[in-house]
Image (cartoon, rainbow, N blue to C red):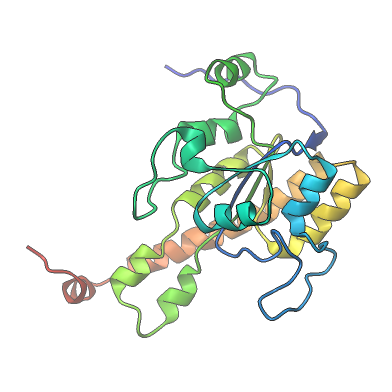
Length: 238
């Protein structure tokens, strides 16, 4: 039976050494330009991740799918989640980030002796930050041409799960869910020589918590509004 060990000691400033990145909206990650070529305020030319690497060349990024691809193409040090976990990715992309190696790295606390022992013996890393955003479920649901199956497939699982865990673990893992906050984080990292403060982590966690709540409510609306007739139109029910 698991025992609860209350965390008694945490760091104010956290250096970003291991950063987990999984974003549907990839604006601002490796460039400061939006698709319409407008500039994202306070984000440098090489984007948030490029800046993090410039202030800490030893940083390691862990990422998934299309996000992994653009980070690699930008020449930044990145490891694909499946390589990090040692667990292959399903062709459909399901469960790629739903692995103990990912979630232990988010939730574990280095000043909790049993947590730290687990991380070390399993040869894992603590994630200092999670940069994440979700699929546009409401947009898909609002499209009159969307079938129930199209909407159902748009329900993001991995992103919200990681975000929920990082929300709990904000005392040791910064969670960033809004590209509009990238510039603020850049300023924070400049001020603290590549580190993010507890005050900022709390502010970011509050925004993330609101985003997670709104997303879960969107998921609930999709399920509550579903009708058996919608399913009969979508699937061959045998």
